[in-house]
Image (tube, rainbow, N blue to C red):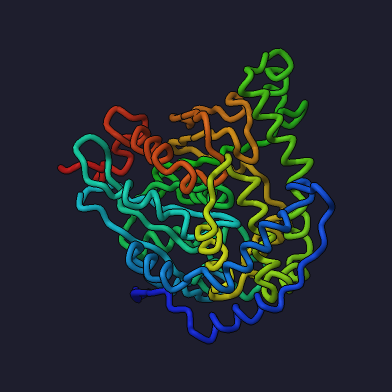
Length: 401
């Protein structure tokens, strides 16, 4: 499992093909005054397609990413699935005893989500802990190889991520993740917790709702507990997502290959599919056109192509995966952002292993990108001196010894 330095290097031929496809885009019509009610607005997509074709400078951002992010690839063997070549970011703090932290993205994110928090996490200071940061490109995303066999589900993503940390010499580490990254890091905490995974933190706290016989104690508590205004607003947000925002999930979890033809062949189709989520899943984040197109370009130029990224939904569903499972017995931290896709009452999530909670007044699904200072601040509080998970990695407490 030797390490190979990596630089993003999209060929001129790939760039030319993208431009040709953008030139041939056929746009749909649109209902008058549709706004965002029907999906990604036509005016936005037309503007972005035109700019992607004639104004956006991929080479500029390719160079920036290569300069900012120390990238590598490594072969990792997955039980029953052979060897996959995995792309990842690995940046060490100047503090030798910094805490090893694995950052795991989800969909429609990528390794790009670590970009803003990386310099904050590795920063050397006597006032807060420092981290050695590993940000994996999940199999099928970015510049990682995609699995070729059926059944590559959450346990396999967890296995790849864990083995990457071991290969880098981090026998003990902590994790942070949102979206699928939350489910994967929770699985890592369950499978490898105690011996290797020492604590985990997520900005996507999720669990099963109160149920009269599956969670009877919580159900009784729910019947007699008055919700705060913030909790009511959170449940409204959760219900909105369930009613208005889950169409993508139904398709990606049942017929991902059918959807994949459009994602892989039409850059405008890919743009519309993901741009909608960037708008709806954030808390009025002021996206620039360059930010959006860099985000989408990572998918368009990804090693296996964008269709590979959505199969995780199918495999999770077929494996009868459950959100909020499995049970974790290591220190757990939650950051709550009001425009997350599921914003649940705090007491639904509390347990004896939940040692840290932080509630924010703004922010959505992509916390590392939308609110990097707030997310890193939470990690510093959780793992810093006096924090509930201080020195969980005994030999790497985040401070100079």
